[in-house]
Length: 345
Image: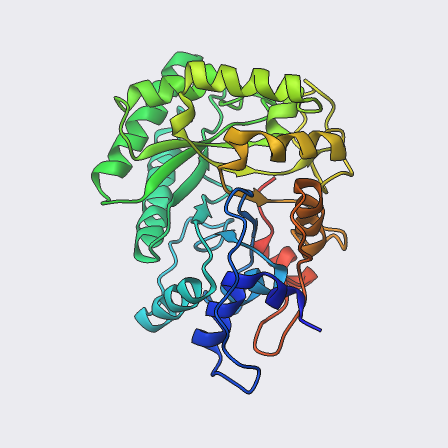
């Protein structure tokens, strides 16, 4: 009986034939996969070695992945030897995991009026962006940060200036602005905030948007129905332009609609619910984007195979995820979560 990874035809075939030597199991050509379905992935730990994120992503059943390039709780930039970077690239190509994105560190706040904090934020974002470029990834996802007591317009202009600096010192990868739930003085809870930063970088094609479903719901977009989802998509198209939306974060919400409470829940266990995610996964514009989970996990250790399996079931993709195989490492442990490898909430 085939494993769940073998049942996901194309990726498992190339991963097995490239990373593991051919065996008596044979080497038949992989069946075609359903290209109409959303590519689903997870935030994955890099604990132990950068390339182990790929093993964990494959074991979880990912099509794409998100990582922290270094510690999310430190300003210090991570430097990896070339062989570690090449192992990551080789494994990711073999597994067909695409896209790769990195999430900015927790400390980053490009909207702050504090000059020293803003300087550190720019340096951290630039280091992460360059790291993603080296790994041949799509880009870095960052929150806009907090304006504290400063005027909103001034804070958004500071963010645009910071992004221009980062783009000017890098070559290819994108900066992806993530929407927020809107708690406190955080920026990015409205599409107008995101559009202001896009305008401030003069529409540079290397700047895009990542939409988080939990944040959308907490900021007032009702994603429980097809009509509410269509209203959100139309509003994003009018303001930021739908072509700017490059990645989705698929998280259920513990916070009520419009509560501005940023608390993620497992898929189907929060207030968006299974019906909402079924509608989200069926929307043609959303379905064309990669979707990455940052869920608490059913064992409270971060994103897991069960959340991905739920999404695939809701999307009507006949595939189970998350079987472990020899040579493929397990998902993050509780210790790894405590050490800072859990995804941003």
